[in-house]
Image 1 (cartoon, helix red, strand yellow):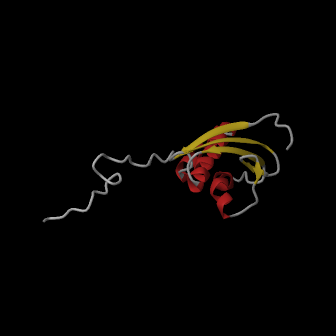
Image 2 (tube, rainbow, N blue to C red):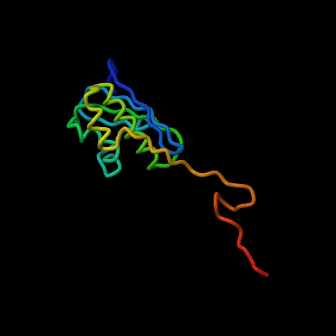
Image 3 (cartoon, rainbow, N blue to C red):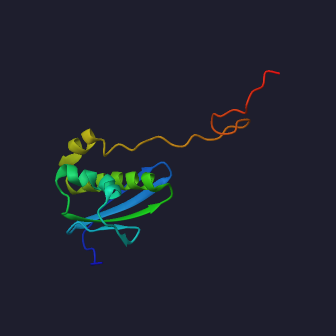
Length: 128
């Protein structure tokens, strides 16, 4: 991996997943937890902000993720990429906001309540 001289960073979160994303000028290489990622349907999720603004293939991406599942991690990276793009060019804010890439999804897992089996699932009720 080449030495990074100037990079733009963004942090994304989704459910329990956290992603720290760095963008720097390059040819479109993607490192995900220090492993090279090949283009696939999953990478299309976090490359969407770059594709929207026409910057796909112009930036190398490095993302470190912790916690959560695969989909939550990908969506956290997408938010991080969008926030990093905003640091590169603040004029993209309207475009990214309209597409929904700058909005953090606030939905979290609901906690389990006492006396219930799950958050809302009650034990089976018997009339007699």
